[in-house]
Image (cartoon, rainbow, N blue to C red; front, top):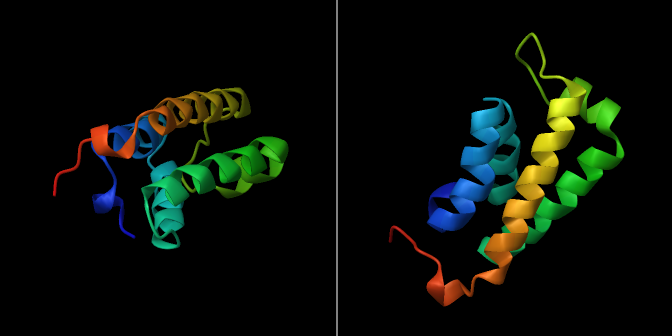
Length: 102
């Protein structure tokens, strides 16, 4: 699936929130979307990968960002928690109530 297929709620919760933090981060979520069949799978996989990043924060902080200077680890951790909370809120919205451009 493509990120253009995401609801406005999901796109804002994951793609826009990560873009507002650092321009490298949304690329990783975009690649994740390519491997998902639908939005619900994307949300669950996004939560899973965020947990992985948080569990190995030092490694992912070093390897996910291309720009210099890298964001601080503390800020990286905070944005992951913030995005995860946003994902939880989107999951609570029934699919029929989410807004799509198509």
